[in-house]
Length: 162
Image (tube, one colour):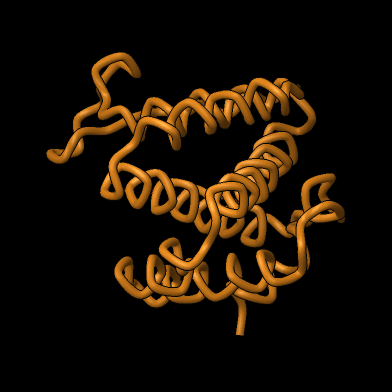
């Protein structure tokens, strides 16, 4: 399984994503952000890293949803664990959901635009929040796929399995 985004993504960004996922797997959000090296990445690289992660998430949603035969529900939760409507979520979470939904529906250009708008207007904390969200979804979706014996991008499986 090779994603469209992985084919166009520089290997150093795939390696960056792997290091961040490994830190996330170990429960180290701060380490994941450090591994993502956001300060060192150019804006275009941050956008490409995000598209790589959201593209992988989209593929896993399709895999888990049996190609659309069994829909996968995307939910947003507040700090207390209560489900909230997407419009009531923090801006980075809203962006993450909209980006993922665009990718799931095959609208990579719309996903790119969502990220461009968010990254152009986001504070450093909001960018970090968006990256953490993408990493968490990548980790959770890949874990669900692996537990069910479903395909996962090799670079993700390598980062998340021993």
